[in-house]
Amino acid sequence: MDNIARTAVGLASLGRPAYINLGRDSELPADRTVEAMREATFAVLDRAYEAGVRRVDVARSYGRAEEFLADWLAVRGHADVTVSSKWGYAYVGEWRMDAAVHEVKEHSSARFRAQWAETRETLPAAPALYQVHSLTSDSPLFDDDALQKALAELVDAGVRVGFSTSGPAQADTIRRALELTVDGRRLFTAVQSTWNVLESSAGLALAEAHRAGVLVQLKETLANGRLVVDPPEVVADIARARGTTPDAVVLAAAYAEEWADVVLLGPAGVAQLEANLAATDLRLSDDDLERLAELRENPREYWARRSQLVWG
Image (cartoon, rainbow, N blue to C red; front, side):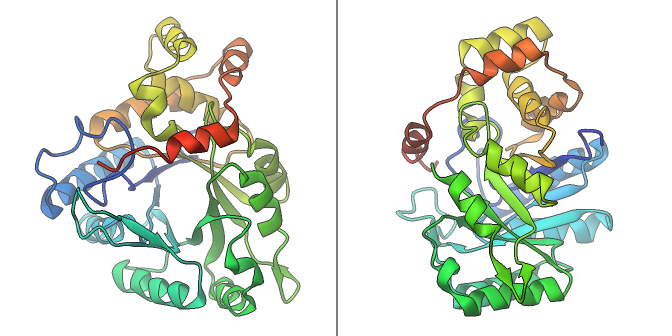
C-alpha cells in the first residue's frame, strides 16, 4: 500500500481556536472566528483530497471539527472519504482562547450515548470508525458492562469500534483493551496511539495488535509540534542531507513502521500539510532510523512535558 493511502488528516488543530500544538500561530487565521477556521479547514481538506488522502479524523471534543467536515463533504460532494471520530471528551471552551478548561473527559454510558447522538446528527453518515477518546488502563469502561454492550451495538450496526490512547502506560492499555469481549467477540478492532521518535513505547503492543488484525493508527507523530518547532540536531541533520524538512523526516520514521496501518497528520494550514505530505515519498535508510531511535525519551518524562504544553 502506498503511503498516501495510509495517511489521515486530523482536525484537532482546526476545529477549535485553541490547542496545545506548537507552531499553529503562523498557519492559522489571525482572527480565529468560526467562519475563518471553517475556511482554513476547507483549504486543508481540499489540498489533502487533491493529494489523494481519503481519511479524515475528528472528535466530539475538537470544537466544531465534525461540523466543519460535514459542511465540506456536503459542499464538495465527496463520497469516498473514510471518517473516524471519537467520544469521551466534551469541548467546553466556548470558542475562547483563554478558557480555563477546554475539554472534560468522561467515559460513561450516558456520555457515549449523548455524543453518539451528536455525531450522528452532525455528520452526513455514520463514521466508519468510532473511538473511545484517550482510553487509559484505569478507565471505568473496563468495569462497565452496560457501556461495553452499548459499544457492541455499534459493531452490530456496521460501525467499527476502537479507542485512542495517551499517557506513559499506553502499551498496558492497548493489551488490556484488546482482551475485552462481548458475547465472545472482540469489542475493539482499531487502536489510535501516540507514536513518534520521542515516544515509541507503545510500538511492541501496536505491532502485536496489527498482527492480530486490528487497525493501527499513529497520532501525535510530530510530538505536538516539538519535533518541528525545535527539532533535535539529528533530525535537522537528516533533513539537510535529504533536502527536506524536519517534519518529513520524523513522519517518514512513522511510515517506516510496517505495522502502522494509518499515520495521522495534524496540520494547522496548507503549508504544514504540504511539508507533512513530503514524508509519503521519503524513504529513510537503516542508519537514519537507528539514529532517530536514539531520540527515545523516558515515557513518563515525555508525558510530563506534554502535560505542560499551554493551550493557545
